[in-house]
Image (cartoon, rainbow, N blue to C red):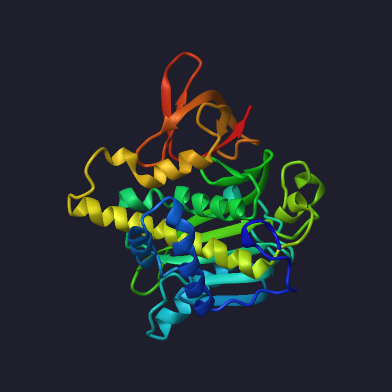
Length: 314
C-alpha cells in the first residue's frame, strides 16, 4: 500500500460511478476531522455533494471540454436538464489544450477530464473557483505522501515541476443561455514519458513515488476534495448572505487554505500573459486580494494587482 491509503495501480482504464463518489465523500468527512468539526465538515460536503453526480468514463476523447459542451447542448435540445457536477473522464485525450491554447500532453495513465458546474455562485464566490480547484488537487496529491505546493493561480508543483493544471471557461447553453463553468483538469499520475519540451518542467506522481498508484482511487480522492472546495464556497456565501460570516471577507477560508499550500507569497516572479512567450515585468509577490488577485510589488515600490495571467518563479 502507498502512503496514507492510496493503493498501488489496479489495472488500466477508469471505472467510476456516482455511488463510488458518494462513498468517498463519507471518507472525506473522516479525513477532515483533524481540521474541522465533524458536523461542519459534513455540512460543507453536503453543499458540494453535486460534484460527481454523474460520471462519464471514456477510453479516449478529443477534448473533455468539447464533450462537456456537446453534452450540455444535446441535453438542452432534448428538453432535459444537465446534472450539475457531471464529471467527464477519459483515459487519454487526443487534442487537449491548456491555458493560452497550449497543447496539453494527455496520454493513458493520467487523470484527464472536465467538471460541469452550473454557475449559481455570486461573482465574489465564483472568483475563488480557480483557487479552490488548485487547493483540491494539491490536497489530493499530498494524500499520496508527496509534498506538492501551489503556484498562483492553481498550478500544482512538485520540486518546481508541474504535476497538474486547470483551464476554466464559461459556456452558455445555446437555447436558454444558462451559464456553466467548465473546469478542465489534467493530473500527471501514472504517465511517465513526456515530449522533450516538457521533460524539464513536468513530472508525474508515479515518477516521484517510484511506482504506479490506483488511478480510480486517486480520481475519487480528487473529486471528494473538489466537493469540499465547492461546498466551502457555497457555505461561506450563505453565511455572508445571512450576515453571519462576520469579520473581514478577505479572510475567506479558501484564501487561507490556498496560502497554506502555496509557496508563491514572498517569491520573486516573472509575470505575463503566456509568460514564457510574452513576459511583462518582474516583481515580488506580497499577498492576495479578497477575490484571489495577486498583489505584486514592483522594483520602484509601486504595487499592481493581477487577476489573470501567470507567473514563473525567479
